[in-house]
Length: 106
Image (cartoon, rainbow, N blue to C red; front, side, top):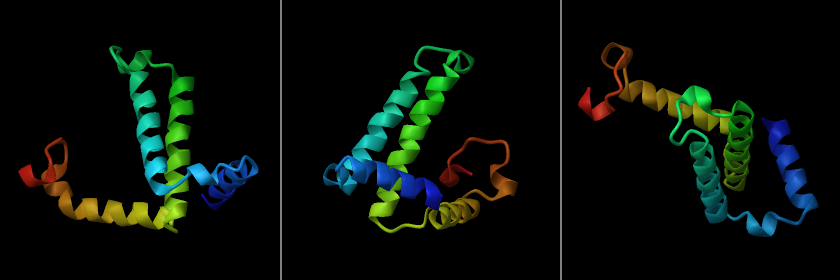
């Protein structure tokens, strides 16, 4: 992930775009790109989505998320593993397996 973030920063800095990459605008960009990802599935069976376009939009979501994490000096691996552990506490296997119920409904 370090290599990815370094490449994103290099790409951004080469274009003098850091001035646009404040946390608020990066969060908004994630939402915009997530919307574009969702649009690929709108009114379709999931198998009908264009996989190449899904890959492209997902990469955009990841790119802005990594740049936002970098703004706050978050270690992406650390925060994701931390969240998995928290979710493990909220969704213990014996209660959550095979159900889509929210943790407060288990």
